[in-house]
Length: 149
Image (cartoon, rainbow, N blue to C red; front, side):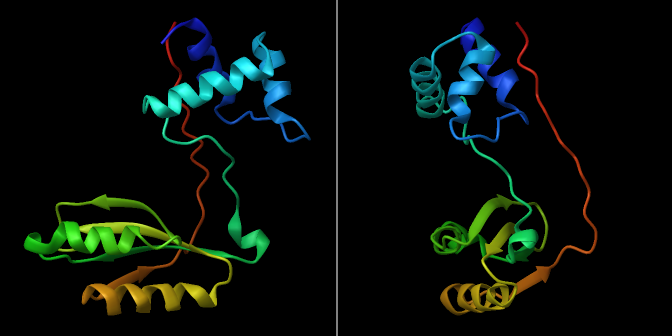
């Protein structure tokens, strides 16, 4: 990773402009062209240096819902259960944990009512009971990891 890649990562964490051409504006701030910024972002994603570029929304303000959910997947079928859970477009952030509830994931839906539908589908398709842990309080973390020069 060179100095420009580091500048891109440091610049875009929490500061992607909200405008018609956000990548052009971001590129100008960094001192490169929009095409170069897009090419470098594609390269960083392909090389798995980055896993995602994009905004985070407060989905509740748009009428949707998030919830944290967990299940206990048998060790011998853990990967098959994970594949079924991860195949749903509403599921993100699936993590293995060393706990009786060994699979934790986030469900995001367009409406609050769809949360229960997705959970019911996961239970039906995996045979595992899903525990729903809806948000009771919101915290603003804003984790930024600066890439050192």
